[in-house]
Image 1 (cartoon, rainbow, N blue to C red):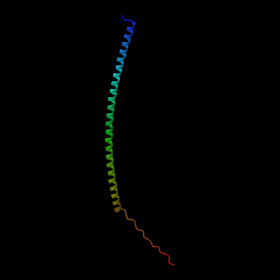
Image 2 (image 1 turned 90 degrees about the horizontal axis):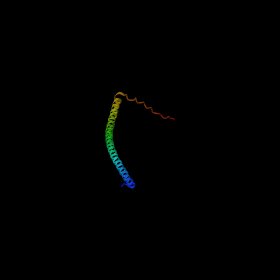
Image 3 (image 1 turned 135 degrees about the vertical axis):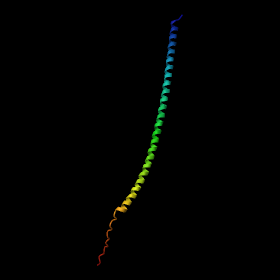
Length: 108
């Protein structure tokens, strides 16, 4: 016959089994969550890498345009200097030389 001791031990065993099953479920859920988080983090890392590559490519393009703009500005400056010299040569009258006067030293 079942005594109260056997019933108590049986109930404790059933409770331990239920507790272990719940614990295993929590561990499995935690592992699934960890895997999902790792996949999300890997996806975010890949997106960041793509964005960084796009920004770097845009920076290279900007630097090339900046260099080209500097070259164009230098050419324009040279042309402006040339045009200024032409303008001065053809349209500006040369300054009238002022006569130099000789100083005479006083004679005693």
